[in-house]
Length: 195
Image 1 (cartoon, rainbow, N blue to C red):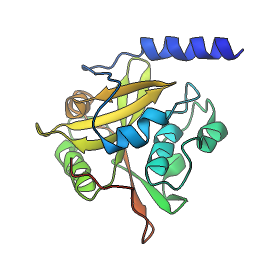
Image 2: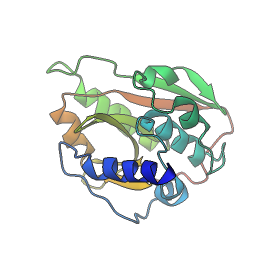
Image 3: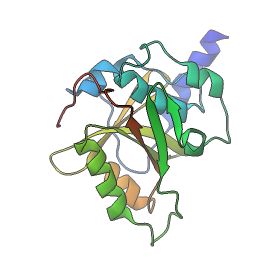
Image 4: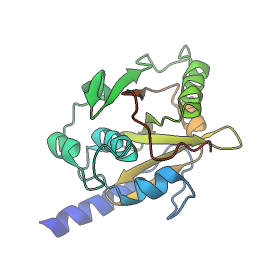
C-alpha cells in the first residue's frame, strides 16, 4: 500500500504542469528553503493548503519539522479552501484570506502585488493559490527577486517546486487569492532575510 501511495505521489508530481514556466532545483540559497522546504512533504494529493500553512508554522519554529497534523486532519478534502484557515490562530500565528474576488479583467492585480511586496518587506511569507493543469495548487512566496518577480515554493509529495515567475502566472489567470498572517508579539522567524 505504501509503495502504491509513493508511486501515485510521484506520478502526480511529474504530471502537474503549470500554465507558465516553472523551475525545480535541489538547492536555493534561501533560509526558508534550507530550514523548511527541503525537509517538508505534502503527504496527501489534496493537502496543499494545510501543507503551505505547515511550512509557515515550521519556519517560525512553533512546530517541529516532522509536524503534519494539519494535513493528517485534512487528508484529501476536495471542498477545502483558504476559508478553512481564515481568521484561524495556530500556535500564535493568525492566518487571513485576502483577495477573494472574481478572477477577471477588474481584478486589482497591482494591489495584490503591492500587498505581497509589503508582507515580504515585513519579513513575512505569503501563501498563494496558483493554477495547475488539474486545478489550483498552493505555494509559499518567500522573497522578491532582483527582477521584481516573486519566488514561490511548494511541495508535491517530497518533490520540490520552485517558481520564479509568479507574477506572470497571476496575470495569466486574472488574479488569485492569497493568505497572509500576523504573529503574536515576540514571535519571530529564526532569521528575517531581506532577499
